[in-house]
Length: 570
Image (cartoon, rainbow, N blue to C red; front, side):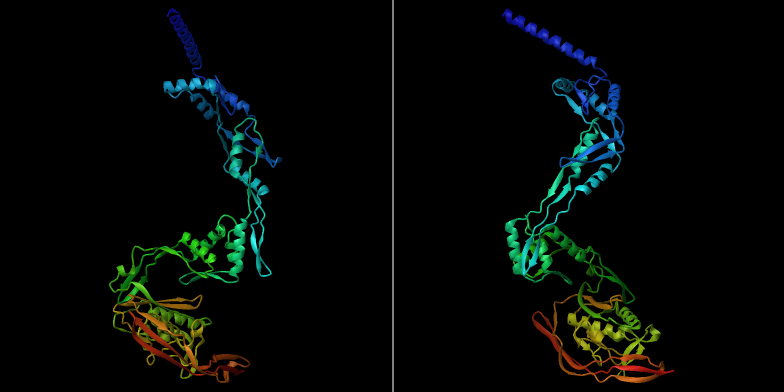
């Protein structure tokens, strides 16, 4: 027992002496950095912060640094960093704070652990903005190689694979990290560049299937459509869409294709505007439902179409409703677009274009109450020079002559087409005396309506049970116009058959008329030739499976001769 007691006393004495020595050691380091601490591998143990800063500064020759760059085992250059700011004070402050957190037990543990686990701190550096990024791009210009992606090529009517060539890309992030680390050392080592390979290797199984699909697809086109937007994918597009690696489709090309489609059809939602002043709509903007392309679904649709040899895809979209709709801000029951009429008038003379635009503005904003008949002549008003119309060609007394308001029939014709589109009862309509080229630019013959106040009018009945609003739009750049009718759709369906020409007669011989008012040797065309024809089409309107009414429109067009004035004046 005595032996063990003496042993314990001896061990306790040794421990006390060791503790005293350790305490003495740490006391001796008051105001100094603790043992086995370094910055950028420079030993600053047991130094005062001031001494440590001096030592660190002296370890670096100057503020600029040159670094050798190694690529593929060879030096490809030396990069010069013009100014590197090293924060010696911050590094020394961090070193000095090790073991001085203020927590006695934590600090004691840290101080002891330093004997066994030395600590090396990085020296913070600051480089002039953008310098390393610029250097990385310069190096990348020497190394980067764009891959040549494998493609399909048609040879003797069959597709084959043209293999690609791998590309190279400098790992810019790795270069910047390595360079930053080396610049914090007094004797930096060369920077070994890391370069990534851009693999163009294809999946053999997928390639075989893709070639088989392309050969089966042939020269057929794939139509991607949404309302009036059509996008045709040609045979070449299909070959570019097919993936040759992990995915069935080439995701880069697919994403670019969907971006192109989205740019054409996506819209922001817009609130409706409706201002009614003095019996007429002064300002009207129907709500616009926002449209977003459903990208994941469209991608799946395209993939399915190509796999299953489908030639038409209805583009999937996500609709976003506006906050204010037309039906919410008026008491007329005008809440939706129910009919559209369109026409083109290319090659019109300036006076005719002016008159089309003016007449269209006169019917724009007109509201027709339920049960009332729309009269084009009444809506447009007097057509004369006194009411703003210019001189253009009109049909009068069997001739085409210059007169006030030429071109107004372009508007009445477009209005007729809009009325047919919804299924309104047409109460008065008369075809032109002869076939006019303007009305057949985007339509078969027989779908026109002439007016000549006060004897000839175009009329239809609003039998919807709600007010309807007429809106007209003229594109004077592309020479097209559009009539839109807004109201409440009652579920009717209007159909018109394709116009049929039952008889034709050739245009009479061209007539040349002497005109002493024109200089001798000049010619001026005042009438244009047109073959005579009898044209008809059927018009039927149904609702809930029952026929509301039907009729046949018949147009008798006279054969029309071209007429030239020949100058005989001196």
